[in-house]
Image (cartoon, rainbow, N blue to C red; front, side):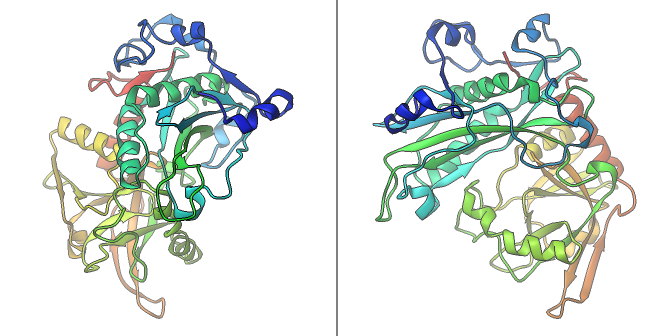
Length: 407
């Protein structure tokens, strides 16, 4: 891929925007096959616990000068991001760009009509110095579903995975070292970059993958359950809207209730269904899971307004492996007392234990409160968290082939 022709003169002289077009030889080194378009399983492959000593060829993770034990979930500058342009009906060559800024047309559909969606995934360092991405194939599928909802072009799964591989490799020094508890967070972003003034899809699109080292989304991570607020004066998504797509506007709608909840002492918000306000939907940035330890049940909402979480999907598989019953269905608000544990799960938070969920009246006074494992992390929450993190860190067998090696 190449940056638009308008930027080429700038790239020739700029000290802050360095673009690297992969040579044919470099591209070949990333793919065992001879074809230009690699097939999933031939280039970047899903693999189990065993790794080779050749992993050091990509460089050593954790060599950047950063306070690895103090990382939060916030933006930090890294070496580069990856950029790819779609025009004339096809994707162009990918580039690694060192400048954190982009030029965008003032008429871009992303700016005017919200034609934008994104993803989130992580890469983890293993004990032997190798680095693996967790389930990037699922993120590729999901960004395409989101993009289709707002009429954006498909990114081939193999192309998406290769793009993620290449940007992690170029930023390998920023992958938190094994044992630090951190990860390199990848934020793929697809948006309409061509100009339109009438309401219609763009003719040009930009795909970016930015990366940054992160720690826990909520300070303390799994150390202590957080208190949540049930939001009743705002809705996250309409029943026939775009709630199941990871489009940018869904998150803008959460800004006011999220900030208001924090001011009241609640770091996390739980939304109800927009139609009746009687069913649990999801948290601001993560899925809801209710745990019934007595009956070994793992219960999570099934709604066309809820974004399907890849972490939730993974935890469901782990729960089934452990003999739990997994239920995806409507969860009535009145069912909350039936759960021993409540969990917020997603790529950013991984697993966050929720100690309580509070409802406030119109005057801001507490009218009801549902309490779970409020003092300590619940046993099932801990077990699920430990298992998924052990898989991500390469400490147990990757029996479902979720880890993709960076090479």
